[in-house]
Length: 112
Image (cartoon, rainbow, N blue to C red; front, side, top):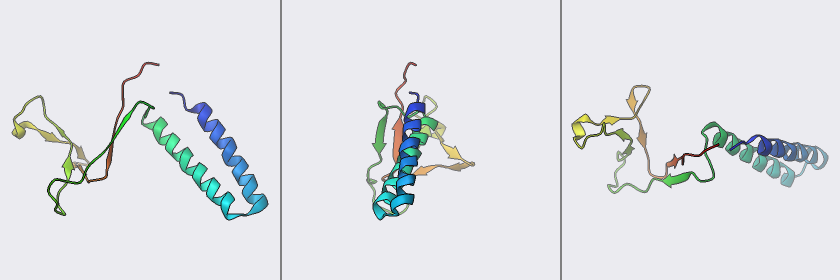
């Protein structure tokens, strides 16, 4: 998906909000600008990570074991059921853990 047109339209709306804010200096105008800024940020994330309208979002549930040290892991099973051969996803050479409420985004392959 090409986000260029959307970003241009949002930039125009943002500029209108800024003009309105300068003229009125109202709390409502400030809140509108903040909302547009948040939306622009979300569009940038979608573009950066190629998040499409048909992408699936999964929110991780509460852990089955309720303890402060419980976490979810992402592993590469290395095409085996033998857990000894599984590899944790790492980030800066440390295992990467997810917490309840974190989200995963599954992108559906698309054709351009």
